[in-house]
Image (cartoon, rainbow over all chains, first blue to last red; front, side):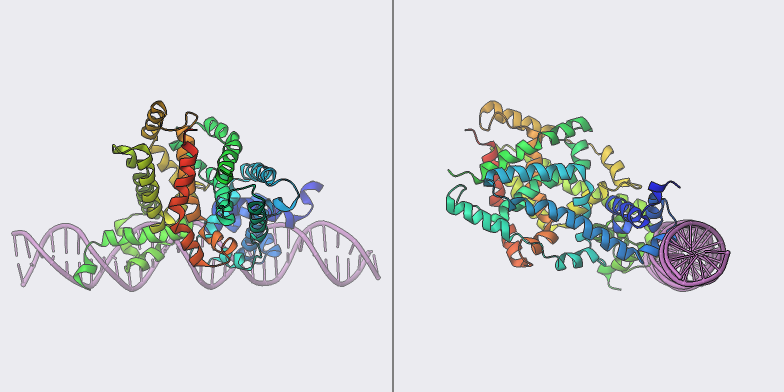
Length: 206
Length: 206
DNA sequence: ATTTGGTTTAACCAATTGGTCAAAGATAGA
DNA sequence: TCTATCTTTGACCAATTGGTTAAACCAAAT
């Protein structure tokens, strides 16, 4: 076993767990799969993470945290609002394309009814949209965006337009693009400009 | 056992299977859960549906078919295009609110990597968007909508705006609406008008 | 009344799965 | 070198799970 492979088994496990959990969901993930992916023994899994539930909780927290950290700090600089919006959409979209399974994983787990650990974890997270709320109010006062804009609705719409085409890829490729993956990739390449146009139209003062 | 309860065990099973599979996903669903929900013996399940895979295939086909049947035939009448759009959005949105688990179920299963029966079923489905493509082209020729509109993009955007707020409910309610479910319900009540405004803005000739 | 067909059940089975344990290996300090 | 601690492993376990089977049940036709 080489040095680089040996270093930090715990991290190797977490990395493997992230992959398998996000690909297969909690119920679809077997501890043996994670052990195989990490190249270790199943017992070693339980040595570092005492139970599947605990390991899942770690992975879910990480995934949700990564998602949240991409969404919320972006409006904390002093750029013009429209610039901030554009930066956010570009940044978020490239994150999604690089991590297409994370949003599906989060949404899928949260929508389960039986023994839903994920839902409990969300309640204790202190994520909120107060900052975005405040920014939108200020912009309205400054007259840079339409008065009727509601911050909550705007945020949901932006996230919607970014996330959905990524999680719906397995249905868009066959049904919309006749199984032409290149057509889908091309569509996603232009997606940023499309979203920006839609969003700017939504908030533009008339 | 009353007459009404006795009639058609097979249908009772399928009904229970639809519920449990859509709520818990394929891997999260246990045959015993379905038997319990249907009020029957587990053996009886296998008497009517020989395996979990077969039963899952039936349920997935049904769910996807129901989804597709709500989306595609709506543009087959002779109404004005904008009227058709409005009717579709209203109709589709009310379907989603009544069946919030169906889209999540379909998307979640299609995104699985391991032993994905759902993905195989989609390939064999002959659903396509040729009709919508043709309609949009005709409207562009008539000059009723913007020339730069691409049918595929428009359709994805409409579906996006309808579906996402439904499947993201468990994250929207705590993060956006501070756990106020009424605020979410109110938001969804106004969603139709919001989507129509966005979509009409997208296609309006300038 | 008996037979015939489909329906329902309990008992059972083999494989899988999450998890434990004691022993072996490795590692670093005394 | 010896020892104490941490890491890794294979053997094992109990519970769960998808699935089978033979027998019981039941309604309708003979």
